[in-house]
Image (cartoon, rainbow, N blue to C red; front, top):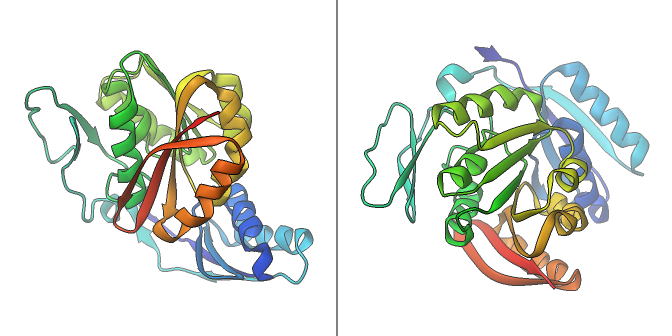
Length: 278
């Protein structure tokens, strides 16, 4: 199925970059790029929606300008398969449905069809989060997955022994993809997907022993209070979606907010971190 996407380019005051990026994520349900301070890029699913997002941002931020341009149509029935290979994260094996793998020893296999949803195991941020989840999840843990996309982290948690895993995603187009992936891996009784704001739903769905937030540094920062409230005492939060250069920005944010870093992981230019509160 070919879909026309629209590029949103926003130019703002450099000091507003983080806030504008967070607002774009919330408005579009898509990721953003920050090629330089004062410039934020995202995409919209229609021209009208993209123009509405820009108009709303102009009202919210001073000295902000935005433009909307068409992108080449993408046939997701073909595009999403590009470059996907089988990968191993400790005893967790992530593979595509057309690349079947027989588990060895104590391995568990996650078979995935991400389609247009984010989360295939091919992105460094997802791999960093997966590595930390495999290291720190204990059998019987309850897991919350903020920004669940294809459902990859929620499903991985269930396969690794979580008693429950709840994925929360703002983009309702991802819901049927995540549900299908859970059914494919026979974890539908353990995994639940919700559509809405993770900051609101996460607190209601908790408490959990593990919270994964594979989104963006700016959004992870905004979600810190909600993540704290949705964790049991001594629970662990896994943050990803941050480039290597953002480590020096997010570490002090965590520490000032009372979090203690217990582990981290770098993968292909992306950084993930595991932390406990208090």
